Amino acid sequence: MAADQVSTALLSAADLAAPSSELAAGQGAPLALARLRRLGAGLLPWLLPAALLTLWFAGAAQGWISPQVLPPPQFVFDTLRDLASSGELWLHVSASLQRVLVGFAAGAVLGLVLGSAMGLSRSVEAYLLPTFNALVQIPVLAWMPFVLLLVGIGEPLKYILIAKAALVPVALNTLQGFRQTPQALREVGAVYGYTRRQQVLEIVLPHAVPTLFTGLRLGFTKAWLSLVVVELVASSEGLGYLIVYGRQLFQLDQVMAAVIVVGAIGYAIDRVLDLGERRFGGTR
Image 1: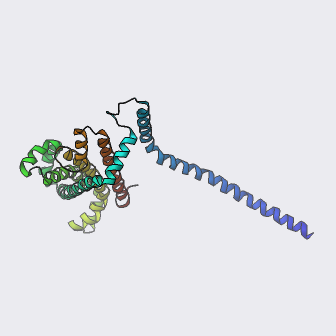
Image 2: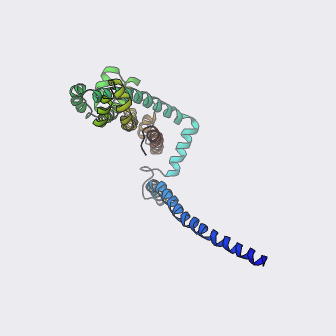
Image 3: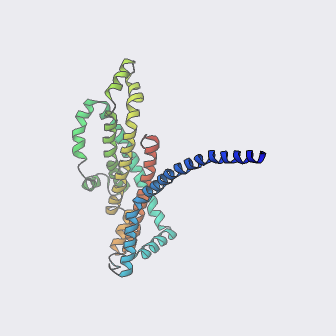
């Protein structure tokens, strides 16, 4: 009799556990599917680069393109390794990073100040914005002869042109960020007796922060692109100079290696700025 009671109890426990197991299995399937979707979304951006790299390897192996026009990947990677091991690559990378960081910092500060002034004052915007919009249409290379006459061909030339490139998106996004604060919040601040300083710091600025980070990210992108352009024209060191020097000697493997480094550094810094934008700018 006792054995029958024990058997009955075990069967009851199994019956109770079965729904829980089925529920866990039912919940596990959507979870696994969600993980697969996230994995697929993470791999999707790499499909096109992988396809291009595969095509490059295949084209070099089959002789579709002359090595004098497009060097084989292994040749380019060997050149990149040699540049890195000799220390020459790090010399050019450090020179380029120094220029872009100094120029971007100067342009970002000026852009924040100018954009804040226009965003906080309609009068300042009315005076400055039309002229600013006209000047920003002129590309960096068009400014080079004029700046060259003023400061010569040294490092100030590069800093000024890089700063100009960074200033434009930072100033415009700062203006947009300061103007996107809902008028209802400003009115609430006025009802509670907020001073002008309190309204700016506690109402306007928090709403403008995401747009400010977007402007800084775009500003650095413009600064990095302008750096390469400036170094292509007037430089004796840097990644842009490495590209020009390789082209002059018809060493296309060196040109390709420098282009890969430019793209990798630009992408890495953009990812860092994107993380900062997500962390401090409130975007998701």
